Amino acid sequence: MTAAPADLHARALHLLQTIWGYPEFRGVQADIVAQVAAGGNALVLMPTGGGKSLCYQLPSLLRPGVGIVVSPLIALMKDQVDTLRQNGVRAAFLNSTLLPHEAREVEDSLLAGHLDLLYVAPERLLLPRTLELLERAPVALFAVDEAHCVSQWGHDFRPEYQQLSVLPGRFPGLPRVALTATADERTRADIKSVLHLWDAPQFVSSFDRPNIQYRVGLKDSPKSQLLHFIREEHAGDAGIVYCLSRKSVEETAKWLSAQGLDALAYHAGLSPAERNRVQDRFLNEEGVVVCATVAFGMGIDKPNVRFVAHLDLPKSMEGYYQETGRAGRDGLPSTAWMVYGLSDVVNVRRMLAGSDAPEEVKRVESAKLDALLTYCEAATCRRQVLLQYFGEDLPGPCGNCDLCHTPPQVRDLTREAQMALSAAIRTGNRFGAAHLTDVLLGRETDKVLAQGHHLLPTFGVGREHDEKLWRSVLRQLVSLGYLSADDHFGLRATGKSRAILKEGQKLLLREDALLPKAGKGKRERASASRAAVSSEHAPLFEALRAWRLQKAKELGLPPYTIFHDA
Ligand code: ADP
Ligand code: MG
Image (cartoon, rainbow, N blue to C red):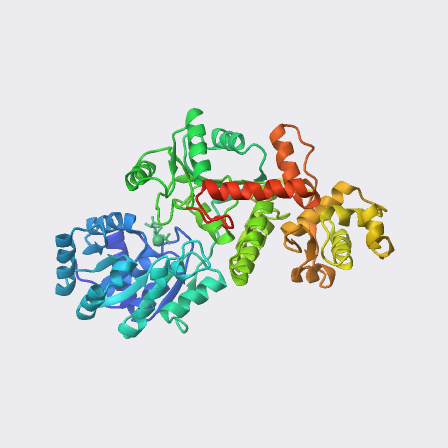
């Protein structure tokens, strides 16, 4: 290389331009590079596609020795290393795909100081042999990519990642930089604790992806809705369609192919060879649509993915953000499209309730679902709701999401919500929606009379509305987590309900989410009645339970599983 400039920033910029060919740093990249190159630790929270790789690659070149990159993405290591090598960086990787003699060659170059960057799978790094090697090698820094894998709360949890806690003790003098696109507080705390980054500066860049248009609709006939969306807006474009189960992945891919689209299926149940084939076609050909479970996508850097569609609710806002973030990395207009049905919601809630996971896990899962539903059922700018979740305030509505384009009709139902909550509380937090509706409407049914509920002050307070509205209100209160259903579908006001009862929290409900259209087709009727499950009776609960068991069985999972299926 030509005579390199002396001061750190100038040297960094020089490398950025000569090796990567980028004219300038993006956002916080420059600060992170400066911090780490100077020997400091860092926690980097940057959205998918934000440019995290550079934040450890460049400091590795600026510091003497080799940068050790821990990454769970074995399948992508070779590509990454090849690209770096093409740019003149001395890079290598160590993982289970190498033959013994290949691995030995890498180890030799490591010890000889002939490497700038070494990608290592966590399980490989943790082998006593590798750790001993690293103690003898000239190491510049440790980078832990996809650092959210340390967290048990996320869907990418990897037990080996927790064992990375050996690094601070064994390599005390070396900088550690952890990078992730998952920014929630709990994940952050886990990363800090495992990698001893309590005092490390955090670099957070905006999570806004202005070129992605966010849209969420009610599920009706999902496959046709999807086909219509692709044909109308993304014909011939590359896209990813996320489904919950392997079975629906297969079905959707098959169906789209039958309609003439170039659609492929991807899930963890396929052979590695088949998965590679799908990934290669997606990366290297134009206009391939991959139908996949969440197993697909982490680390995939295809710039021109034009749409990401969700046919089922994602697991959490983090999951949704990461998955949709795979669209539009090139900065051009792209769409994040999702349909969800209230039946999905009820099902997930039932699964949570029926799970024998520890209480704390259930609470976290349930809170995550609430956040997602609040997003789905948002009445105002969707992008604002999304970013709010990651602690970021947008100055105003984005003007681009579905809700900005077509503001939904909303109704302030705070007073009705208060009535419904007090009906639940005053009847002892154990009656179902049908009975609560009777109480609110002032119906003297046998059950009402037998329970003496006609004597309550809430009896008949809701006469001004009809039964349909009350059922909607109750359902929404369940969806949003103000009411929770017990095993017999009795409704109980949750701690959260205080916000509505006492703290002036408003309940603005969308008219369309409020009153499902009268069923036209069979399918619509079926989903509408399932959606209203909290207000129907035993047969429906049975159907739900059966559905859940069957779904778990299909996926080969225990009956109480909350679907993390990959
Ligand atoms: P992440 O790991 O955060 O998802 P990557 O490191 O894979 O993101 O980078 C995403 C894309 O952004 C890549 O195509 C990369 O080449 C590009 N990129 C990163 N930094 C810059 C920069 N300073 N200028 C232009 N492009 C950049
Ligand atoms: Mg990355």
